[in-house]
Image (tube, rainbow over the protein chains, first blue to last red):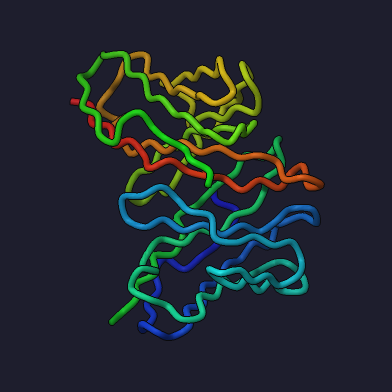
Length: 110
Length: 117
């Protein structure tokens, strides 16, 4: 079973910020939170990852709560090309199998 | 840029055939993975390998085997294909980031859509 909980789907208007939540209450202290996305008919694509501090790169921002039990991926100005399934995951210890879960299907509305 | 390639985008095989899915990465990554993806089930890990000739079972290894003879190549083998193995197969590779042995960003190939008749 997936160790994270994400909404099944979300809608966001084009040009607005898309905020995708993820619960990962069983995460341990040395495990990073990763976000990937999968555009239709393509392999998943890495977006961003973080441990404790908020992170930002050219694709997105990642906000991690102080207790690390949840995080939010922010796409600041969503475009139609951001329509995809977004996966939140953790557990990259070699002895711990990585589980992607079902992700959130994000629809960007024109 | 990291490049992960898979031998075929689409493949049609018959029940009982032996099927080889090949994956090659060009970034000298230690870790390689095979997943399958089915509607409503997300990505499920079949096998992964953290070094040449090393392999570990994922969540759904039954009916599959793997081979890693060279660092850049990881093969998934369906010994006797069955219709329930019709799926999208995704290969990925990763390299532990310096200073963070358990931090691994995975890079995925484009996928192979396999149909078993």
